[in-house]
Image 1 (cartoon, rainbow, N blue to C red):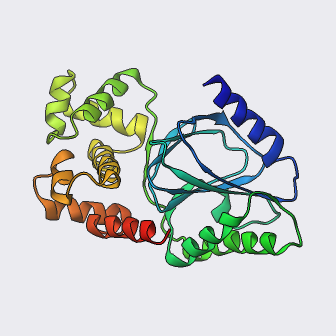
Image 2 (cartoon, rainbow, N blue to C red; image 1 turned 180 degrees about the vertical axis):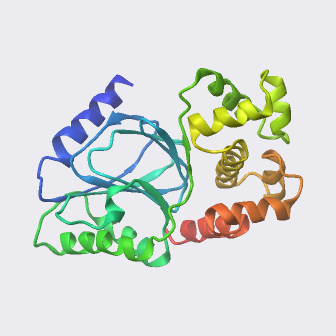
Length: 274
């Protein structure tokens, strides 16, 4: 881990921000590398292929699935951890410009449509600084410019970090029992709360209800299982506590904007296109 940390520190401090005016490009199969908390002067567009990437800030844990990207504003401290050694991460780091669109000021996760996918795949031939005035710089800047035009839905693929230790125990309980149907009343009773007081704790600490947290956590786990390609959609539904496949599919669609089967098909198309 010490070698990995040294590599990351050297990479981020000496390369990404070395040329303040360039767009920096970096593609890497992550292996087992964990990128510890850091920040940079440039904004980061991180696109993932092959599996899930966990991006953690001081207040939130983001879950970046394959074929999605996360926008990380300049100066935001974050760590990065791939779920498996097979994750391909494609990064573009952009200098901050005056009077930028509001889109660039907030972190968020967005699906990659066919147009953006082709543009990102085109960047595969680059690495390092893209200098102003070069064709590669113009193309990379076009990728940035198009984002506010096509990325209208910031997907709720993040969960807040609990501040209250009592709530941390409850969230671990949820995590360890995702294959069961977890009822709010049962959780309150298990941990010695009235339903009203536990509801207030969730709202005060996480700014969301129990059912909102539980639903998102189930779907995030489902995405992980789908990407492993070991279980059918029905089996994945059961693994995250849904006895009804249509209910699972509808919930998945509400969060990601596509059905579980379509999500799997999209991954297979990307694999065949490599």
